[in-house]
Image (cartoon, rainbow, N blue to C red; front, side):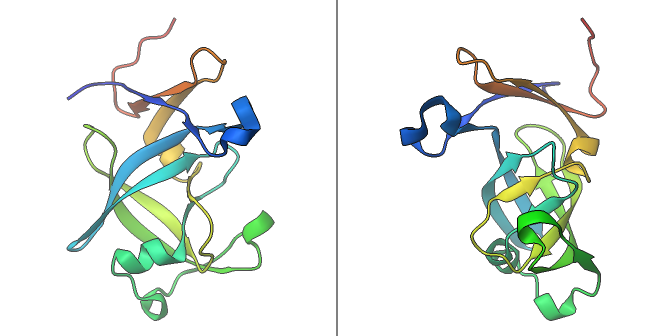
Length: 146
């Protein structure tokens, strides 16, 4: 199993030129017998991981059965949110449990934030126009400091 994986930034709107590239990460989310392949936005400024409503439904969650409420801030403050625990598989790494704020918002990306994506993974961003990539390391990987 590799210790690191490199992913390219993904353009979201080509009319924006270089400003359209985002650090996006493909991952599989698994809950009970349901699995979905998604792309998450790596957001170091987000306090929590955020799961859009329809992805939660696809994973088999039932809104009324989730009893732990969360208050989101910023653009998502107007939406209710519930805490859900999801197994996530990133590339060839071992599966990890990620806590998400499952929101009723539908037109948002999956957001990977401080709690707990950036607790489980170290990420190195290479944003220059020539690289546009990010390197992912699980928290328990052997690290080389330079």
